[in-house]
Image (cartoon, rainbow, N blue to C red):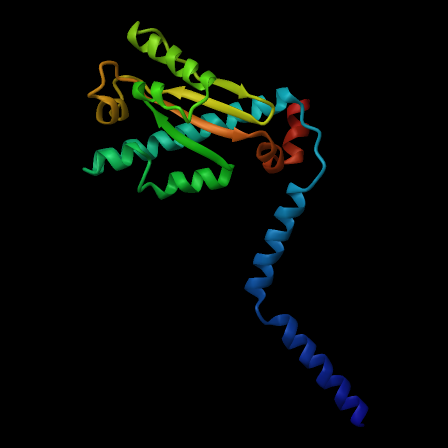
Length: 197
């Protein structure tokens, strides 16, 4: 009889232990699944990485531009916003894609934190802006581990007007820095298979 009650008591105790904190377990399970997906062995070609960076870069720039334009219209804190400060949703984008997002202008040609290649690209955008030539997006490879997605903002856009209107040439360029290993880690293996077909 004692053994019977002890068995029931043990079963109830185990049941209670496992049924408590279901939210934490579900959250932990989701994190574990994400971690496992990121650790899957993937064969990613340089062309696939460039295609992914082009796709993600376009999405990031589109969302960042909408967020900044909207904030500039509503706020008077122009300088902070143009430095992409006080924009938590842009911080969230950086975390989501594991990137660094900057908004560059003509004065950034002197920024020594940018590589020579990055400054050359900015100089090309500046030349096109001065000559009123069309501006496209591009991807620059820095070494084996970094890719930069660049996209110019239209000169009549509120971002150019409010952030770089005082410059001789109104130039605003989105600069999104990707690390190749993060791109590979974050990409879904199934989407890679689709891109190969």
